[in-house]
Length: 104
Length: 168
Image (cartoon, rainbow over all chains, first blue to last red):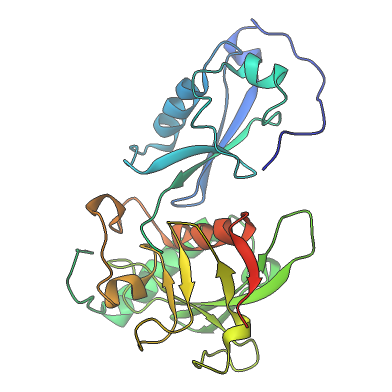
């Protein structure tokens, strides 16, 4: 749950969507996942919203958006994919939707 | 359909098996049971090995037993078991339980109020059987969820900084 170590090749922001960054989002409610090309200017919130559409699911109140390594992105939803890349956070752009649970 | 503060009711075995058969490929994502390292003890029981500790270390192995007798109206039963007996006995098998501390979404009780082991999480059947207090937003949703929810919640806790080793 730390920032990624490996820096990928810098990709050009501003390309059209079909050449934009590939993102992968896994829904931990079901293990279903989707992959799609986004834009570098898309915010994480936009990526998260689109993932629900692609999955054909609705957001649950307790859902949170995380990097695949479990690092929470809830404080970074306004960041664009370009900013995320430049800050070396979740550079592989593999995300997950995790539903909060009651317990303890 | 799961509800708060009611006694869970088993579903007809044929329905439970059908639900498991439907969801198993989704959760395995193209792997076979063997490739995933899982085994099926009987038509309604899965054994799933899990690892505790940060992904960067080898970690501690645990065996989770999932029972589907109430599935999918209710989440699967989930218990950590002794890998030799495939069962859990209070007082004898504590070392097969992980210790999760400080996480308000999941805790593992070796013996909850004299009822036995409880993986205290709204994605397990036992949570409802003991009538644990909860908020409606955490109620099991059999349309939106399958048993991946249960597994992933437990895996997440085991891989998090809330994991503190074995109980025994």
